[in-house]
Image (cartoon, rainbow, N blue to C red):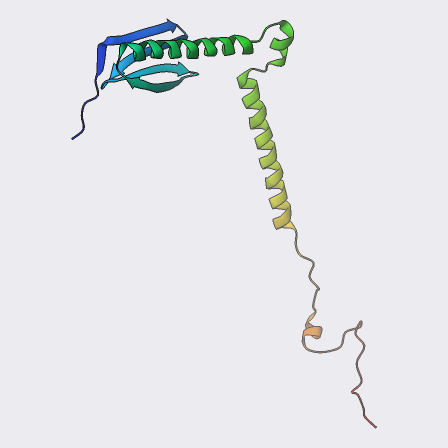
Length: 146
């Protein structure tokens, strides 16, 4: 039978401000931290519940959130030149969709051309099929031995 996981509300704490916010809590006697990184929830277990472990968890979470904030500030477009070089996602997706359709069209044209091409066959007339010599064939003489 599965045990029910419970958080201890006495040791829960929210750290940071939106959008860089995280939570430290104690669940089943273990100190854990949780934060959101680009829409994905991340969790880490720090250790058994004690005052020292909770302080360590707070410090770890503050460091993670500070790194995320610094990383976000570092990658923000700064001036007019950078903003012109940054292409909106919708334009990028449209560009890739058009390129994929272009490749599909070229493949379809190649398949149509391959199927439509008739192999070069030698035309056989009825008289050749009957074993008669045609105009371009030279009749062979039976080989005679002396």
